[in-house]
Length: 105
Image (cartoon, rainbow, N blue to C red; front, side, top):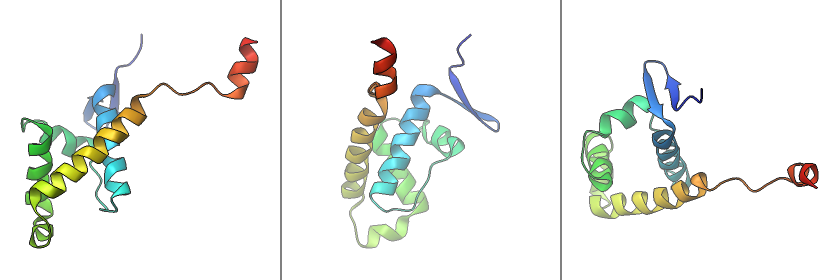
């Protein structure tokens, strides 16, 4: 049977959600924010409807100091768009390697 959850301590995320969380973390890294959402943080934020609202809430709760220099909508839009791009990339099927192509030939 195929396991459809990624286990992290007592928090299990379905693989689709794990990909989403990984996309957020890739976006944070690309934007040099130094943030990382663990599975528990991601799951806790899921109770907030709409992705941009989740991002806004996280910024306001954990990084309010950034709001002295940046508008919360600017930051949440930037993070959301970067995350969306990463999610597409992480969700694409991997291209066959040369070894896999040789095995088929």
